[in-house]
Image 1 (tube, rainbow, N blue to C red):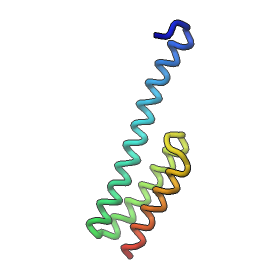
Image 2: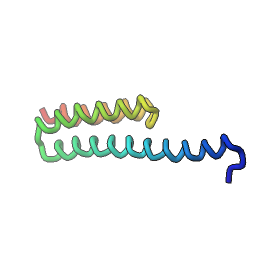
Image 3: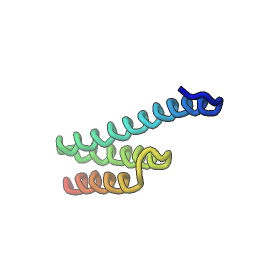
Length: 87
């Protein structure tokens, strides 16, 4: 248990940040799964629109510092390649 005033505050702040980070990560992973699902269903138009949304969401998570830039680059590349292979 924290004893100092600033340590008590940081416990609250860390909880809040953890919740926000989890939300960003969940949104990002959901967007990525939508692209995967559209690719599996062989729906080119849906995959392309979902890819746009997924890239936007992934970039937002990276800007907030939720995920690393290497994670972002790797996943954007993989998703883009999967969608491009359909065409």
